[in-house]
Length: 209
Ligand SMILES: Cc1cc2nc3c(=O)[nH]c(=O)nc-3n(C[C@H](O)[C@H](O)[C@H](O)COP(=O)(O)O)c2cc1C
Image (tube, rainbow, N blue to C red; front, side, top):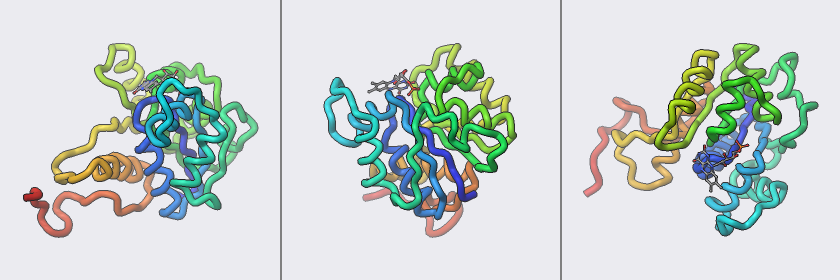
């Protein structure tokens, strides 16, 4: 898998997006990065230390995200409204898509097929072409509407991979927990990585003293 669309939407969890960008680049993938307006707002707040109420300039935020976490030569920044992107067409053999974090709003648009931006459209294309689509939703608690939408996209072929780190790997840091979720997402995409320790492999896991 070497062409991956990475959609970043306005749910909490920007560190997952940053780590995914980094890990995909390190795995040798060419990444098409598309960030929603709300996604840029959350990245600015959670990663770049901007105040929660300060409006974010999406271009500036995406530029910083790529500079800090991507390998610029591997990343193509895609406009949210750019329906001329190859990722908007099923005829283009772009191979897989990851939306992390995936907001309830984006989830709803995908589940209902009423998308209006490139992130929604790319997800739609992946589903209709039976290609890999991995969604990392983050919300709690979950309403019946949200649960129905998750079931709908899962039935349509998406991998629903909640941002819920495991503790059986005995994480020591927040980064370990982020890596767990991103590692599982890359597994689902078919991209190799060394982000998480696999159960039963390597030295036995032990608690920190
Ligand atoms: C700081 C912040 C955190 C948010 N966290 C979540 C969240 O965890 N899950 C969610 O579904 N929406 C969350 N939202 C709301 C979404 O950003 C909002 O529904 C937005 O319309 C999503 O648009 P998008 O899907 O185009 O990015 C959050 C908004 C802000 C400002």
